[in-house]
Length: 329
Image 1 (cartoon, helix red, strand yellow):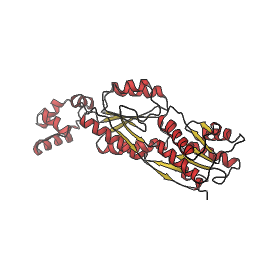
Image 2: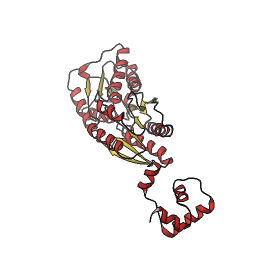
Image 3: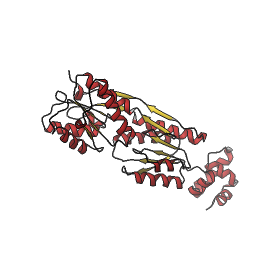
Image 4: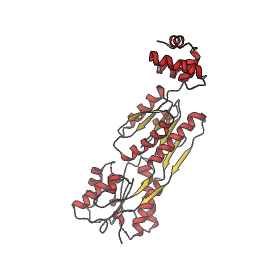
């Protein structure tokens, strides 16, 4: 049954049926006739036909680096809450930290009808920039700052600086660092720079032998700690770019008689549930991931409504959550 046939059964015009399904103004008597006909026929209009006519799909594409991350799930929850209140559905794509899949996902959403795109990426390339500049719908980047685009990001530099300074202010003299890929501007580069600033301000030097780059995993944190503690020079405080890396490093310490926080203070970024229930609860920086998701969604809605080409950057601040892993008297 097409819309004309349904309109004839309902005894109203085609335009009245169209206004009904698109939430337009409709007189009560005509609304009642349409609802009675719906009850009788079970008619529903073609979704694809409606979206072609209205140019609105009520779909938003969300590109995620992985599904297993607690921080990513908090961001996604915030996005879903805001967009769900506005009647949007999310199309989630998991790229498994594969930059090529991020590109193909952007291309997928560029070629297919969605009303907007939210991208959570870790590393940006020239190809990212080229494709993002060609997007046909508003696009918001969450978790990174990328010049020339709408972004919601965190103060990763400040987070790393403050956590490192906390440990140095407690008397640590041999700081160590386990970070992530420096091509990741937020978690990699900015957290490394924040660590280094705190160290140099304390009148200390960054020892390359006490610095390592890990993957975003507990196993990698364990492996890097093992290599770090095999040398002659032992650190007395360790800043990790993520809670998962810190958890792996702390597991190595536990297995090898390194007492936390007496022998080694440990601090990280993320304030994950896992970090709170470790054998020594982990001091960590709380980044407002869910808020980032909500603000990213609000930014997208604003861009969709205004159609403006003016780009906005919102940086969220952080909270230091001190627990036993840095509680050295």
